[in-house]
Length: 62
Image 1 (spheres, rainbow, N blue to C red):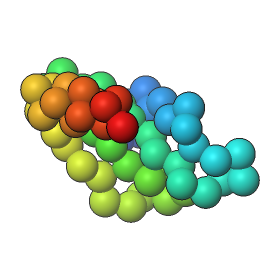
Image 2 (image 1 turned 135 degrees about the horizontal axis):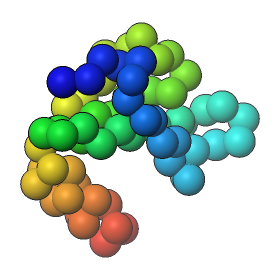
Image 3 (image 1 turned 180 degrees about the vertical axis):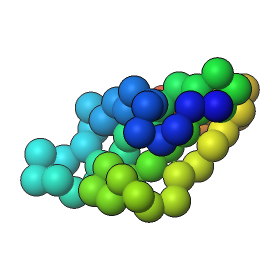
């Protein structure tokens, strides 16, 4: 497993330009990691790829 500093984090395109409501995602080998980009040391979620895909599908439905 890679360390947090080695992960390639991607900020959501829906994040506010004022630095609010920012979410970042990093794809790991066995999990998709999600964190608050305003605080890189905050707790993060580690979701299985299946759960992440289910979430994205649900969120895309509005």
